[in-house]
Image (tube, rainbow, N blue to C red; front, side):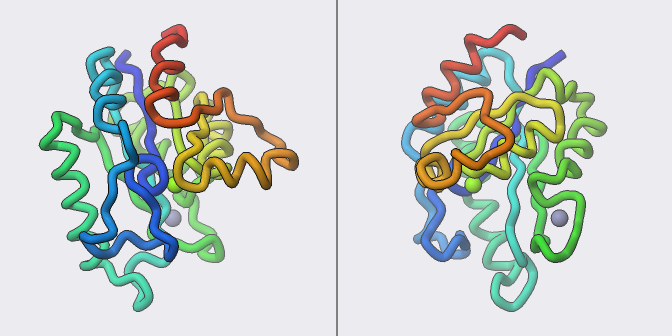
Length: 185
Ligand SMILES: [Mg+2]
Ligand SMILES: [Zn+2]
């Protein structure tokens, strides 16, 4: 079965701006090294699924068209480098909406698993927030916290009270990739 890496977007693949909304092209910055990292995973047979929480997407404070055009630009940038995503899943809800797709809820992973015959127990989740780690745990996947985006702060300020620890903590997606490739599959 094709191994799958579920990847957070903001703070993991692209930098997260201070206002947490990537809604203009001039806010788009790739996190350093992500393209070669993903290409090495692709060469090892991995498939990618993007999973991102976009709080309040489609509300007046975060209009859908602004998000959409930038998001398509980002996907196009990755595609131009040979990196495609089997699925791109977005939770537009806020925590107070009580949906089951908002990470660390497993709705997005379960949907992808059904549609693409993914074995979650043999999958990895990488992200820069504790919610990405809880997501992996909730779905029965392995977790990697990267110290890009909010990752370093999460580790420094909050890790002591986490009830779930990451399977691996990596400086960057490059280092995360090296660890993933060392795991039994
Ligand atoms: Mg993130
Ligand atoms: Zn949701």
